[in-house]
Amino acid sequence: MSTHYDAIVIGTGQAGPSLAVRLAGAGRKVAIVERGAFGGTCVNTGCIPTKTMVASAYAAHLARRAADFGVSVGGSVVVDMKKVKARKDAISSADRRSVEAWLRGTPNCTVYTGHARFESPREVRVGSEILAAGQIFVNVGGRATVPPIPGLSEVPFWNNSSMMGVDFVPPHLVVLGGSYVGLEFAQMYRRFGSAVTVLELSPRIIAREDEEVSAAVKDVLEREGIVVRVGVKCLAVEKTAEGVRLTVECEAGAPVVTGSHLLVAVGRRPNTEDLGLDEAGVEVDARGYIVVDDQLRTSVPGIWALGDCNGKGAFTHTSYNDFEIVAANLLDGDPRRVTDRITTYALFTDPPLGRAGMTEAEARAAGHRILVGTRPMTRVKRAVEKGETLGFIKIVVDADSRVILGAAILGVTGDEVVHCLLDTMYAKAPYTVVQRAMHIHPTVSELLPTVLGDLKPA
Image (cartoon, rainbow, N blue to C red; front, side, top):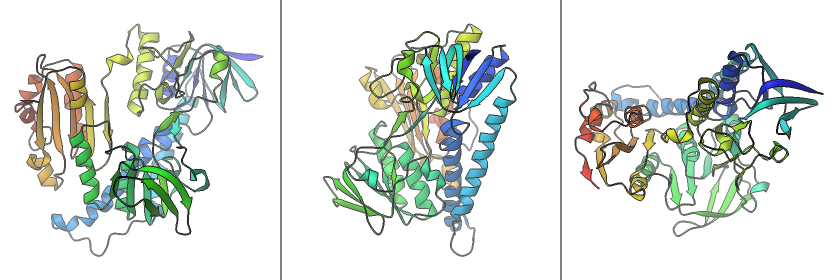
C-alpha cells in the first residue's frame, strides 16, 4: 500500500526545500525526504560553518596585525578553538533548525525522515513506507572522495565534514589537496596556530585557474608560513606515534612528509549509489553523477536531478539556480536552461578570489581574439587603506564583440566586486558600459572602469 503525492523531493540541500515549498504553494501535495541533517552540505559542513570559521581565523590574523594600524591589543593572541567551534555550531544549527521548521510548517508539504530509495520510476521507499508520485526530484548532494592510497584506511584522517568536529589546534596539519576546500582549511588553521603543509598532485594549486592566479594564491599562503608543495604524488600513508607519515613521489623536496593530523581534500563524489536509481532506470555517468538535460530532466520522464548530484555545478548557488530553472519550467512557463548561466564562484581564502566566466586560457582555447586588463591591488586605494594589498584584478574581453568574457579578482572584497562584471556579462552589454560608469571612491569597484580603460591585446 503506497501513499500518493503529486511530487516527492529527495534531499533538503539548497534546491530541495525551496522547490518543495514552491510546489506546495502552487497547490501540489508534496513529500520531502531527509535521511540526515536538514539543510545539506552548505548548512552543516560547507559554506555556513566553514565561512564562520574563516571569520574567526581572520579575527585572529587581524589581531596579530593590530600594531600595523596603531592599535595595541596587549600580549599574544590566543585562539580558543572550543569557543570557535561553539560559535560555528550555533550559527549552523540555527540554520538547520530553520530549514526543518520551514518545511514542517508549510501547508501541503509532508516531511519524512529516513533513507529514500527508488522502488520503480514512480515509487520511493522510506523505511517501511512506499511513497508514489508522478514527479520526483532528486537533491541528494555529494560527499568527500577518499582516494585509494595504500594505508589511508588504517590512518585516522579528516575530510571537510569531520573537520567540523575539531575543537583544538592541530600541531601540524597536512592537507592532501591544493584546491578550493583544502586551501581554505590550510589558511584557516595556520591562522589558528597550526603548522600547515599542503600537498598537491598537479604542477600548481587550483589548476583550473590561470597560472598567475595560482601563483599569486600560492604566494599569499606562503607569506603566512604555509608550506605548499606541488607535483607531489602520495604513495602511502602510515600512522606514527606523533601522527601520520606520508611517503611521496616528487621532483623536488623530501620524499617523506610527517604531521600530527591529516586532512584529505581531493574532490567530491555524488551520493547516488544507494538510491536504487537502477530500479527507476535513471542513467548515471561513469563517476556516478545523474545524467540530466539542459532543463535538469533525467533519462526517465518525471524524474529530475538538482544540485551536486547532477554534475552541473558544485556550489550552493548552482544548486539554488537548479531550483529556479526547474520551478520556472514547471510552474511559470519560462523555459530557463542550465546553459543560460555563467560560471561563477569564489575561493574564500584571505584575500578572496572572485571568479566569473572564462579564464584567459579558456578564452584562447575557445578561439576568441582577446583583450586583457590588469591592476595590482597595491594600486587600489581601498586596499591600501585597509592594509590588504595582496592580489590583482584581471578582466578578459572579446576584442570583436567587446563583451566581457571573464574576470578574476584576487583581493580584498573580490568575492563581492566580481558581481559588477557578472551582471554586465548576463546583460551581454559591451565592456564600455562599466568603463564609463561612475563608481564610488574609495572602493575596490571604482578600479573596474580604470582596468577596462587600459585593455591590451593578449
